[in-house]
Amino acid sequence: MCELLAMSANTPTDLCFSFTGLTRRGGATGPHKDGWGVAFYEGQGVRAFHDVDASANSRIAEMVQTHPIKSEVAICHIRQANVGSVCLANTHPFIRELWGRYWVFAHNGQLSDFKSRPGIYEPVGSTDSEALFCQILNHLRDHCHRDSPTEELVDHLVQLSAGFSRLGVFNLLLSNGDWLFTYCSTKMACITRRAPFGPARLRDADVIVDFESETTPDDVVSVIVTEPLTTDEVWDIYQPGEWRLWRRGEAIMQGQAAER
Amino acid sequence: MCELLAMSANTPTDLCFSFTGLTRRGGATGPHKDGWGVAFYEGQGVRAFHDVDASANSRIAEMVQTHPIKSEVAICHIRQANVGSVCLANTHPFIRELWGRYWVFAHNGQLSDFKSRPGIYEPVGSTDSEALFCQILNHLRDHCHRDSPTEELVDHLVQLSAGFSRLGVFNLLLSNGDWLFTYCSTKMACITRRAPFGPARLRDADVIVDFESETTPDDVVSVIVTEPLTTDEVWDIYQPGEWRLWRRGEAIMQGQAAER
Figure 1 (cartoon, one colour):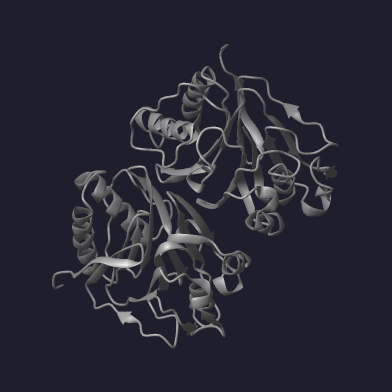
Figure 2 (cartoon, each protein chain N blue to C red):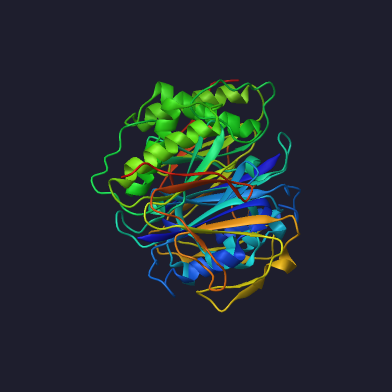
């Protein structure tokens, strides 16, 4: 399987602390050693890093841990391969352009008997995850348009996610750079940090950060993961079928998909 | 304007030497300080790095210079902004998926009065370059198909390039990961290195490499640039309107577009 990490913030914020915790699980404190990737939105642009090396030993991951890249939306994935060989083309997050925006997708899970339908977007690699991403974008292109209200897009995403969850495990992170859609099929947790900020200690590395020294009183930063990253904070656990839409650090919409 | 660098090789080869020379021109020996980017194909996958910092001072560029990333096709660009602000969305190379492959594009030049037509591929940023790339892919999707012979694709690319050249400067690097298409509107040069390999000295940095110690006798590596990178080698200068198609280090097709 794999692990997911996302961030939504109301001001450009670096991911160094959370990324350091997550990437330890890629070959050090966890078995997710079959590559990793991270995408940072910077305005409409996306800065992505992908590597097939274990993140705990990756020179590129080390650079991302120590070089603060500030973003309002970021999506990260560390991989333990099940479907598809270990290669760059199979490394999340996947990126495509739709309606003049980059869309970024990462998925935890595996679907049995998933057959993707032909469409404009096609997978490059051999993972079911990338095929699912293409199917989502093909569906949105067919059923919505560039000016569709967010509520309408989210309704499609919830229906699609609930459908995919019936075929297997489908924990999802998806962003168009404006909002971040998160869907929990089996495991997802989140935390929103805002003033008064305090310290936090990573579960996977001997690192403590004092957010107060790194933030302003107006900052709101939410982190969404498949497994909580810190030991001394209270994480909010998603229920199976629960989804949340994040924008600028806040969950602006949330709900529960219909019974499976 | 900007500068371009590409590599085509018959074995996975790193770009550290050439990249080091080129990135010096981004704020040290040259004025191209408005960001840089590089994309490396690795199988069907693409590993890309983009930055809005001047490449001569970029922490990410420093990592790419010193961390050998091996690839058979790579495309690099350093930017001096003319059309479009300095931001990540305007930073080459641009990447899109077509027919289940990633296509990578970088452009040197500027076109006056270029109006892109609506199509499936849309620019995210505001450069004429990205709009040209989208127009090329929309044209290929409309006029060719996934199994079109390379000769047919190249014929379309030559016609499109010659047409764009009539509107301004259009020096082009374009790859689908299999081949690398290069078109010279005003300036382009190339060199093919093969056994017996010798040393080479960068024009822009006090660096000498002895390729013999880094290669095997069967290696063939070609480098294509807008301005030669070394002082002690003979570069082959493209004529205006000349194009070459590279695969596995060799120019497998070449020609001259019709008179402008």
